[in-house]
Image (cartoon, rainbow, N blue to C red; front, side, top):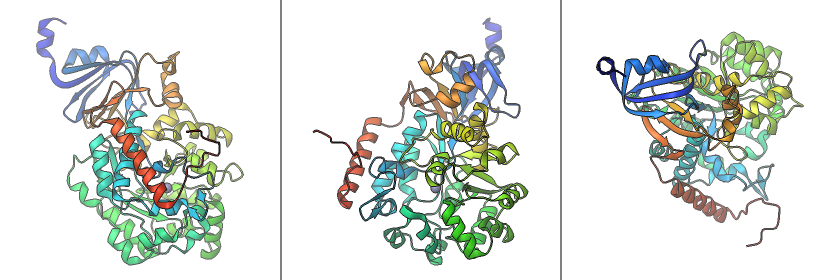
Length: 471
Ligand SMILES: [Zn+2]
């Protein structure tokens, strides 16, 4: 570059060059040899490499070596603390007289910190720069501290927002008296928790923010639903809840209510474009019309769908997505899947339902569509000038990146752990050379293991291995 060109170039903090830049902008532009300029916490420019390098001079330059560069993905529904019962329970999620929900109730603040730190590292390893926790953490400060330490975005809500837990009896291993002792199904508890995390939003640059979530699944009175919805609207934050999860439980609820829960929620004014419903497996044709008419978003959790219903209960979600409903993806519990597995699962489950989706759909569902349900689509979810610099550079030179004639396809379906080289969140380099720049990963892993071993001892549980282990 001639000296006079260099003099004309504007300074920036970081330039990412030589990337296959998947922007997920409105036109879904991909720059085959692209570059990004980052200033502070923002993206200053995105485009062809030659254009960006002519206009910008970076203090640091990252050469992506031809690998995919994409907006940080967001897991739109993940109970991060559930990851620490991986392999403790079998598929029934029960162990003797204990249920998985008893396990949930036994958690300490320290366990929640350790589990969230583990999940946050796992997220970055898969190119996820943020997650939405559904309101199942007893000490949100512990989770917030862990997410901030690792450097990922987290959306937190008040814990177990419910005021009538009678309907939980239909939900098998999710039913637990120990859990109701800790999170009582009373209106006082719900009112105390409602909006408890919104104070975090005063800091516009905060990595951990608050939103409003009720548990759903027939555990909220109309008064609680309406109060939560109003609070979300007042604070301009998203409103989320679980619904239509296990078909038998939804059928029991419909019978008791005399109509479907979705139609009821529409009648009381809870459904609109700011509302997001999670699972949405057990819906009928009239419910589908309600979804389309009200413009709610859906978080699809394909693993949970297969475990709680399966193909014998046809999911309408891939069809609704094709009809224009905003659908995004969640891992839900991470007992039997890692953060980042939902895209792969959705691709195959949609095919199994006879409604195949594309690799591009998977990437959209995890980026801009997930940002929308986080209420952050104006800030993250795509690589565009002015947005926050949440950027992932995949690893070049690994087998899963080849033959590299359609890197979008490989990003969606083969972008597993170990395929992420560098991650920026808010313009900060939180991951470099496939490692955390913020925390000692070995210490995170050791703490998570020790936490689970303590919990197994407290509850008298052994891992459900099933095969003889010689020590
Ligand atoms: Zn959930």
